[in-house]
Image (cartoon, rainbow, N blue to C red; front, side):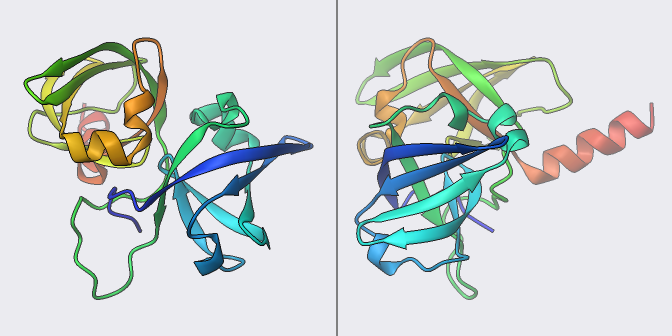
Length: 195
């Protein structure tokens, strides 16, 4: 379980393909605090640490994860948002995030707005929904939806979040990972069953 509050940014230093899987080696300032078998959200995708070598650690993404997320499009040098799982008894500062990316979206508009940043994203038609003032996880970052339409939503990002996550690299055309609010997913599923 995660909260969508980004702890660190890692840099991809190498890739290794194995069958349909892709092993990512990442360098991070928190590598020395990690352990094998630990779950960490990478751009919102929960992945398991499988190897640690000094400042570099390795995680593996299976084919399904690569198909549903932007991980397969990352390159050496790409910056990745990191969040370690929530500790029991800790405050939940963002919202309840599972680390299971539902789909990707494309940035269709990005602008600075009186000291904050407004991003608009479009995603393919699906059962997933957003609502104004509801939660959405973009590249693992817990955000509040400020405008919601069919398959399009906007979020406002404060300067701190802009500077301390990889959202500052997002521009028109950038593909991001989305995890929709878990309560919204259950409601959407119940609505479809009752139609």
